[in-house]
Length: 68
Image 1 (cartoon, rainbow, N blue to C red):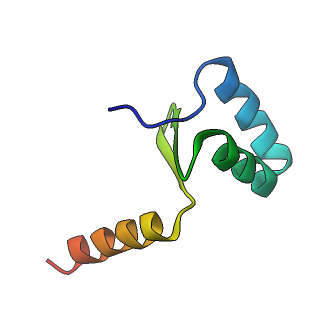
Image 2 (tube, one colour):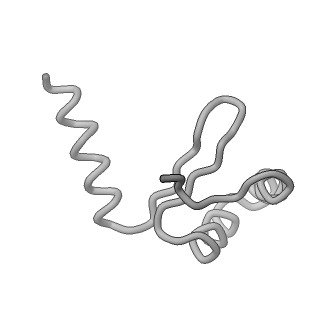
């Protein structure tokens, strides 16, 4: 399953917009693609989590991996 997000030329436009205006760009990504968005960058994937339960789930997983 592939998560939704900008690809190809759309990703280039998003990165340019993000440099100019980060928060509005992130808000537009969520409107366009939903509460979980991934952008495949050369350095690795960038995830945008906008729904509180997705954020809490990720935070819980990170905390549990550091306490083992």
